Amino acid sequence: MLTGFLKNRLHFRGFVISDWEGIDRITYPPHANYTYSVQASILAGVDMVMVPYNYPEFINELSNLVKKNVIPMSRIDDAVKRILRVKFSMGLFETPLADNSLANEVGSKEHRELAREAVRKSLVLLQNGKSAAAGPLLPLPKKVPKILVAGSHADNLGYQCGGWTIEWQGIGGNNLTAGTTILNAIKATVNQSTQVVFNENPDPAFVKSNDFSYAIVVVGEQPYAETKGDNLNLTLPEPGPSTINNVCGAVKCVVVVVSGRPLVIEPYLASMDALVAAWLPGSEGQGVADALFGDYGFSGKLARTWFKRVDQLPMNVGDQHYDPLFPFGFGLTTKPSRQSS
Image (cartoon, rainbow, N blue to C red):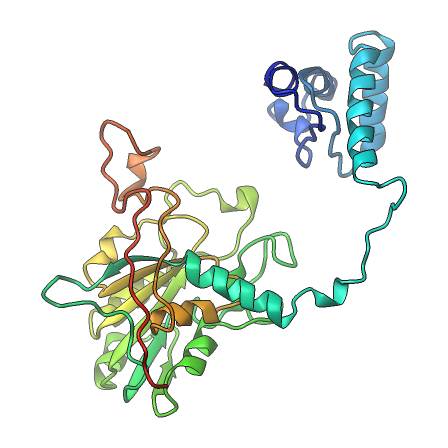
């Protein structure tokens, strides 16, 4: 694939780089036969190897394989030529250091507005109204006496951002980076007379006794990156299900799911009045409120099939028994509503 197809047939003139300790994982357990891993990867067409720690070992193994003519010098020459070609074409030899004259612009107001736009356009409205007779819940009215905001992800910037944010795995909480949580976005959007009550995981008695006009429940996955996110169940983590059941069983509710992928949501669907897939909205939670309250309409579509149960996986469009909860490309739309705030 790397040499015969990518390089020879497609005439790819760039270079191929391995992932972090990627060649170690050619064997199981990783690094069990490093000499073989170096030989197999370089002969296959890998031109640059990402060795995070013990690079002298890699250099020695590769040098020995070349000295023994196991890896021909022509393969080394090809790799070096490809790497140098890319560096020359980028101008790295003339200007080796990046131009940081615009560094202070990163995270500017214009950047955050663009990120906010990306958030609201990527939201996917999966359900809006328990039934046709009940009518749609969204967009939500801004001016009501009192609303409930609940859920582990409502006031957690780290959860909104996910992994690969400042730290490798990301972290929870609101001290990770600058931004707007979904809760704060809701508070900034509703009418000044509307009381916003935040209770992360209320019990049914609390919900029933407070006479809320409606509730917004924000739940999802905790941050992860790479194999830390491997999950054979793909269930919505607790206390998400408990919060949905406690709140949506007592008051009209919209559930916003913050996750890096579809999760098992069918068991809770009947209790919801509306459901929104927000993916990982990052720092600009205001984009979620933009659509919930109708300042902008929902327009996003599913970029992949949303399954009912994990035992259906893998499931793709065109499969003989394609029976998704929400099919590829699905997404309800709404029009902006002009409300006075």
